[in-house]
Length: 484
Image (tube, rainbow, N blue to C red):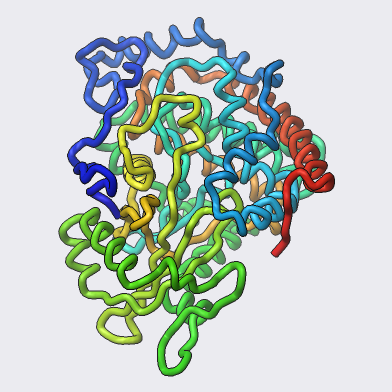
């Protein structure tokens, strides 16, 4: 929803503030504009990747121990809370208190600080920034096929490729414990995720740049490749369920006709109308800027819809406390609904430790990162700025979206899923980083896979210690908590 910055009136799409960053290691001033070592030969890129083993060996990637001057994790969360809606901060903490994995989902800033204190290979990609396993999932591509990909980009920023892989590895280890995995299950699942990453990045290192750009994970094709059995049946059921998650389902679940008008049904504090924020002037201001962020053909489609209602809707775990709205639009008639989610974007948790984004508008940063990393993105994905200066990105609320049901996970099903996540992450990194150098660094042995299994186990223990400290802070009244 923005091309113009509220304060300066600068054209963000024309470049905005570009913060000088590092050149891709091993490259010179002829490096391609994207930062990929595009002007090095394949042989040179392979040599570059292998040479990075001297900088950081693959087994060393598995090392984890907290820094002696490690910042108190609760202090990091309190710092984040200063920029969130005060009344919703206790709700955020309440959701994080539900389990060690729920805590981990809201602790991206804590792990970013930890990763910043560790060595890396120096090879940069566009990071998801919060690549835990629940930030992957399915959604409808523009051609209406169901695809699987990374699907959360609030923290996206350019940085070391290992950071995303390590966050995924830790999340797998923590989640496997949470679903009651036996001894060794967490390690096997974490290794499966790392193996999925290694195999996909090596596969993509052998194909053309256009092949990388066109590649995607088609869920229907994936289902067809799985032998008959429980896992195949589960995937087929997921596909059928995803196809029901459309705008008509949102219409039934979130709205009702009240006094002759279709409106969102208030369910405080999760869904509430906020008239002092969503005034006609605010809506017109945001809509106009969002509209300008869309591609010409999609702007034409958006113009066919009119706004019917808008309300604040709390979402997720880590995002609780940020301004987030759902907006109902109507097309040709009341049987043509469109639901958009308008979500605040703030500085990435990674920006405390890495070069700043070149985009002044953080919503533009999110959208640009999403478009770069995803094989195909929501046709209504865009960004804006509110009258108060808040940055918002916009996307469809429901368009065949689904994520993994951790509550019904089995060890075999989880291993298949996390391997898929690892492959999706590799494909996303291959679009923005030097996939050939990363593949050469990883090699064909199991050293990196085992290292990620080591790291996942070690960081799961760290997360558990942080979670206990977090619960202690709640119990002692240091931070407020509210469950809904």
